[in-house]
Image (cartoon, rainbow, N blue to C red):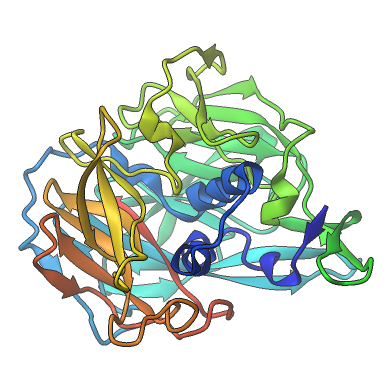
Length: 395
């Protein structure tokens, strides 16, 4: 199976992966779309889709840094804030393997600035007081709970199986920790992939090594393991990643994974039992959806293409029908029921195949009448080591 070399270091960076194809109108096969969706799920923290008072935060409560990219100080709007951001770089290993590693910058409540960390993986709990952190080379056998005011790990939760990713439940009371036998971001010589256009050349590729997940009670540290290994017919190599993390449903009652054979999700209870649920039309949306606080609307995909518009769709959560279009390339989070946070390129410079990578975080109103810059612009390059990716959390 062929893969382009530039895909590998950027396997988990969903934002820029999608924009070129959307703006140029290229078609994707069903299998490729499904796997890239997995990378999108991994690249954005979906803690923002559940928990928190519905509609109680106003979009006027905005903290913007239009001259900072990456941000040095807090960015926030309505009910969510950028709790952290990460960049990705390819780290060569002594044995010829490599790791598509993340470098994290985490918001420090004491200094009120984003500060670089040495953690291999992290997620921030709703309320932005605690972060779950993983150290060193993934997978690891303990999870740290760090106080964001002091920057110190308050305690460690020990587990028997190696953990490669963690995510807080919408209420912040539990963690789902996905387990792996190999580094989910690793690229291995003994799992080679063909380089597209490389005359038979091969390069290290990912391994599908997921073994299952823990559901962990944060207060007690009690962890219950469920075996859910990766499917061996996975198409993960297309996206250049072996990461197949589990995520929480919006209400925190179930867990889900993105399907790899077609768009859609598999749902499980917290004990790992597959749930037969009626498939919703919005489950099939590419990229993955974020739900408004009142549950009535979901984010859709890029909807431009006519008259050079750079807009994205907002859909009715029940019917999947288009409810609105708003300025932006990709919708990332809901600030409240009538405002969203999106990536948007400069309309004066953004053209199909040119300028789409020079984008910034913006706050857009649902009627599309108001656009407020939240960050400065990222460089006009689709692939560079310092390209930052935000993590959103209920504040």
